[in-house]
Amino acid sequence: MKVIKEPAQIQQLVDEIHKSGRSIGVVPTMGALHKAHRSLIARARKENDFLIVTIFVNPTQFGPGEDYKSYPRTFKNDQEICSKENADLIFSPDEENMYLEGHATTVNVAGGLTDYMCAKHRPGHYSGVATVVAKLLNITKPHRAYFGQKDYQQFRVIERMTKDLNIKTKLISCPIVRENDGLAISSRNKYLTKKERKQATYIYKALKEIALKIKSGQEISVSSLYKAIADNIPEAEIDYADIFDAKKLYPVTEFKKDVVIAAALRLGKARLIDNVVVKKGVD
Ligand code: PAF
Image 1 (tube, helix red, strand yellow):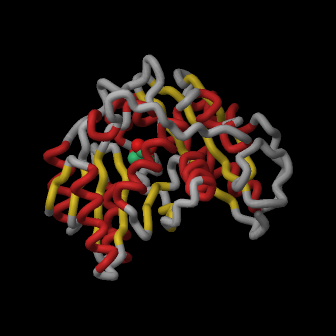
Image 2 (image 1 turned 30 degrees about the vertical axis):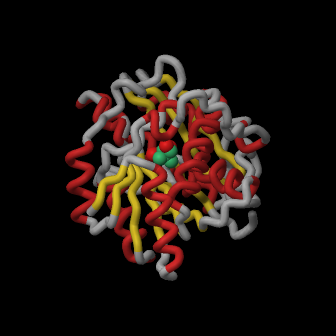
């Protein structure tokens, strides 16, 4: 398994792979790989001839005061995981390879998809994500790219970005991978104390409860999800806990179409996000 830092080197290699008619899958990551990444990598391995995992802690998607500096960097372990999952290549550029001196062009994400959810609480975050993902897709030219459903809004924003920028890569959203007690696996779970870790399990419990009520057609008050999380995790600073249209990501109070029940909160040093999608078959 090769490790390459230079975009130009990757571009040369992927051009050759395209010429040979083989398919390319990419799993974009910020490293600190865990079980959820492994499931993306394993799926991408099955569905493509050549598999690239990108590892880059992207500075432009972190806001002031966020955890860019302390974000876990575990390259050796990541390399072992990629190797066990039979990846062909790791692309792990340095910041100066990705953002050339004097860089002046970014992807600006605006419009309805970023009016609510995490975008409202992390200004500029999704422009940073869209910029780096556009670059990663341009460099690796994959047939397919794999993302976790945990960052639901991220997937929708990237979907819109590829449509707007005529990028032909097929995007695949993969199911959330959870610990045995239901907590969505995340690199940031490492920041939780024992007590916080226990409390964090209420997030998925609360989301599931609301999902069950929607499925069975029961009445739900708009604030019941927020209240359930606030009551069970009193130390949490909740950014949002609400129900959104699954395609357009605006809050809804009627559940005739597909919806995503989603929450984001700060607990101690961690910011946790999670969601459950309820499908009605209408989107
Ligand atoms: O989901 C992530 O790990 C990151 O946001 C991504 C897509 C790799 C872009 O930096």
